[in-house]
Image 1 (tube, rainbow, N blue to C red):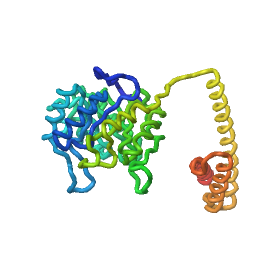
Image 2 (cartoon, rainbow, N blue to C red):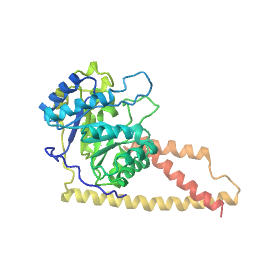
Image 3 (cartoon, one colour):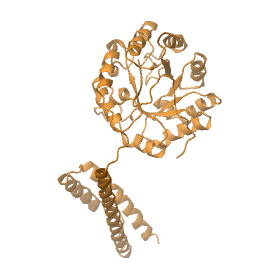
Image 4 (cartoon, helix red, strand yellow):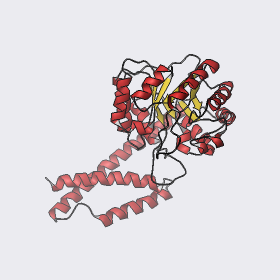
Length: 355
């Protein structure tokens, strides 16, 4: 996957990891915005975020101040020198954000999930040179995420970045939005030049989870963090539980361990050779297993048997999961691997039955 990208370079913003964007969930009052902005600026934050329009799950909640709050963002720029960013969800938002000099736009998870909305925003940004950050869609669909990025890129937006904010789930877990780290990792593999931010506030949903999620994002090599910070979090009009004070944010950032992205030694090279040998052996064993599966497919065809034998499938999953646990591999990981292997075995046997 290739996008026509340019680096997001902002004067005064260091290139070292992590680039930090911080500010309240919502721009509630001018006093709240300015108090938070000055505190963050005093702690070295260079990019200020605040929600001007707030998409809410149900009507009746605070949905943002709209255009009324945009002059407050202008004041933040004038008094602190910070760049300012806000979320846009349609062409009208884009027009107003540009009118009031917003420096960076971001697109929320609900909007990314709608190709119609993404195309509307892309059309509104034709001919505009502005950095745009795209959050993952609410559902774990990497193609939808990439599709949104492509729409913007085709409209001429070259300063793009992605934001990992986790994925919605009906299951109640420790996180507000399940991280599913493998999805942003796959996005990085497909588009290596695309900057990748993490939103620990929306993944965690609780302020006590922000610090460990920030560290995990750094350990995975992400480029930046976008964190909700409020001068009085407990009094916030939206998402109070996941916001931290500017001083707590400063404490969290100072404790981060930033590891080198590329560091190769002779011993690491040797260990990677061992990994390659293991992978080669796995492929050879997998090929052998599929050969046996095809022979079983021939037997089933000759004896007029169905391909899927549910009892045998359950036996395999249970037995291999237990073996994995004894060998230090999580049963869930083993189950996923053997589900994929079984799916391929069934596919090959179906081919034989239909020959």
